[in-house]
Structure formats: C-alpha cells, structure tokens
Length: 372
Image (cartoon, rainbow, N blue to C red):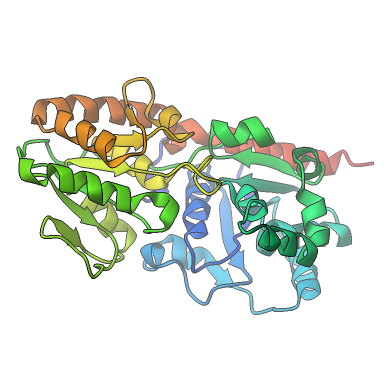
C-alpha cells in the first residue's frame, strides 16, 4: 500500500521547485507537510522540507521517501533563521510555510523583510484560534504579550493575505481565512478488506488528546461490547484498559494504513472546542479512501468531508453507540464504505487537488514578479 506519488497520472507541468518550511519535524504537523509534498511530487516539481525544530522526522513517516527530503537546520537564533531562509529561498520558485506559526510562517515573514520571495502560507488546523482561546484567560494574555509583534502580524485574515498567498485544508477554515481550498491529499491505493464480520472491529488512529474524544468513543464501544464490538487504538494502554480494547501503541504510517484497512468501522469522535472546530484528521481521509464505514461527530468540517451519505452524530457515547449498532450488518457497512470511498476519490486524491495547489504557488510567483 505504498503512498508514493510517482504512480500519479497528472499531466506534466513545467518543472518547478518548492521549499517547505514546517514548524517541527517531530510532531504531527509534519503530516500536513507530507500531504503537500505529495502534491508537489505529483506535479513533477522538485522539493525540499526544512525545519528549525525537531531532531528527527515524525515517527509515522520516519522510514518513508518523504523523510529523505527533510532536513533539520541547526540555527537557534530567530534573526539568523530569517537570514538563512532569505538566502535559500532564492534557490526555489516558491516557499510554502506550513501552518501560520512562529516557527514556520513567522520566520518567513522575517525573511521577507530582508528580500521578497514568492510565499504561500498553509492553514490546515485552527492553530491560531486554539492559541488565542487558551483558558484560563491569563494564558491567552501572556501569549499575546510574549509574542505581541507576531500576533499583530497575523491577527486577522487580511494581514495574512498581505504577506502571502493562502491555502486552507477545508471549507470551515476557508470561511474565516479565504484562500484556495487544498484538502489533505492522498494517492489512491485500493479499498480495504471486505466488510464481512458480524462482530465489528472499531478503529481509532491518532493521538489521544482531550479534544479527539477517545474517552467518548471508549464509552460508546463499552455500550456495544455485549453485541460483539471491539476497538483498536493506536496509543499505549491506560491503566483502565478493557477486555474489548486493543492498544497497539504508535505505529509507522504504512502500519497505520494496514490497521485501518483491517477495521470494520472508523470513528472520529471529536469534541466541539477551539482545538477541533476547523480540524480535519487525515486518518478520516485514509479510512474513506480504503472504503471503511465511518462515523463522525457533528463538528465542522467533518460533516463536509463525509458528505450527505455519511453518518454524522452528536458527540455523546449514546449517539455513537447507536450509530455503531446500526452498522453491525456487514452489508450496511459495505454500502457505506463504498459511498465513503467514492467521496474520497472526489475530494482527496492528488489528481483532484494538485491544480489548486499549483494555482496558489503560481499566484505567489506572480505576486512577486509584479511587485513595483
């Protein structure tokens, strides 16, 4: 189930080069960088990924072809980071700052002051909203004070558009920030195993942070365990692990795909808060593309991702449990899985998304070339 972009059938475009600046090689923001890297590869462009933080590539992608394109730049001074980026930007047609954070877009803004270059900023999560909505209030105020100059530079969408072309990962973020819609991209592999079990296995792939709603999902599966439902979770087992739960720890990217392909149902139980509204977990895309039956909570943009044929519920254990029981029949799961795969092929494969990515990059180039 290789995710290499070399199998794409996208028509060749003039070869260009792109430099991705990712905020931290070690964390899951690198997953979005990987998605954009797939698009560049599919277009036939050369690319490189740099970061000033993180000693190694995010674990799920550590042994991938993508990892070979990544480099940690050992410069700690913010001013020297900006100088470095200003120098190397001239070697590429366009620079893409992944996320509007200080360690990516913030460095790019400083580098622009030294010398203009084509810049695209990617907004794929509610990162700004989460930071400015911290509780208690003193933490939000402290963040504004500590990073006042940067906060002022990104405090509203026009300020961001003034500095770069903008791309966003979903319509919820597009409503706030504008820009081109560039969803999470995947190359098509093939559908997963046939839905055949009458004792369905539920899967959750990702971190177990509070806004992910894993505790809600565990309660839902507990309510359905007497009906034969089990769950697998890609995290270390907690002290209160149940007999119907399998905790497999963090896994490499390919193993994660295999885990999803072997499941009967994938649930995205996001809680509604400042961390989740506007966030589209890429594992939902993987599950849809593999033809898994999926259940999501009613937190935007999840309903958009699954479309009118998806199962959308409120974020309670009881509502999720009811949805799971409705999917006990393999025929029902197969029908939903087919609909989800069709939706994924419509929205999330590189062939569909690459024109929007290319358009934003070329607009950035044009913006600089027409600068007076």
